Length: 76
Image (cartoon, rainbow, N blue to C red; front, top):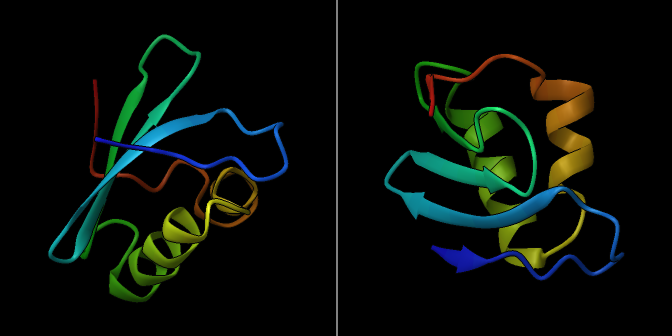
């Protein structure tokens, strides 16, 4: 996984892994720390935005908490 840059210093996102049409996000806390988002849930356009935010290192946690919410494919 790629460490998340966390440009603001206050994100719960620790790392991410980009796939073709998917992103896996690892959070620093929580019962389940790894979440898979893909073209089925939450959808291709949302995943593309998440991938861009992950690479920028800014805004991913906020986007997940305000827009994506519990729309994920898998958690572990």
